[in-house]
Length: 264
Ligand code: URA
View (cartoon, rainbow, N blue to C red):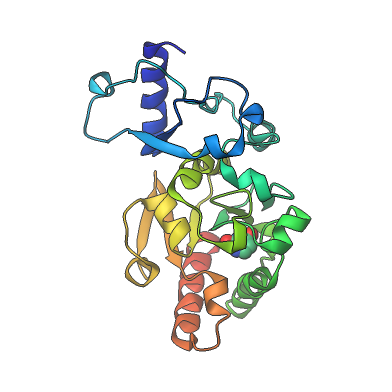
């Protein structure tokens, strides 16, 4: 890829909200990532694409060994994104993965929930939020809407995650994994164009809003991802911990707020 092509790509990724692109070790040749031995896949440095700086002034390394995913096509679709993800090996999460968890629900959904990344059950089934946290999420969506006189089921919304492969030991996704996979999340949201987004937990909030603030600080008010209204609430896994009674009440309030906004 030539320098000018790379500059154009950087501009495109910055517009998508991507802040860093990770370079692999300079020992890695530009070849199909499948053939690259695992230890060499660790990101060693990043090219930052800061908002305020013109792309033309960003220094592009002479030896370009970045493997960039393709740009979003003009008439992007969920199927296209899924096939672009393919049998992904773009980050180290692929190593322990069983199934890629793309997302599920109504492609015409007016409300999208974004979680962190698959757990063991999701990795096994290839579907998001099907374990204990998922059962709670279903209960929250269906229970709250029923109480509020809004007739929606889980199947009426769309649910996906920041990263599509299970992080080992359910650790938090690392920045390079979030950046790499976040590009697909952004494409999903751009295609879905929901009326609102609900970010579940601080990883989703960070991926969509940037910044370092946690849920306590971000919840209770409206934010925006591009022009789409976004609310942040606690991750259902956090709510499963018995001592989080206040957080549970607050999560129900957040959910009521977003459900009424979308469906009233
Ligand atoms: N936690 C998540 O963040 N996502 C899932 O899909 C399941 C559990």
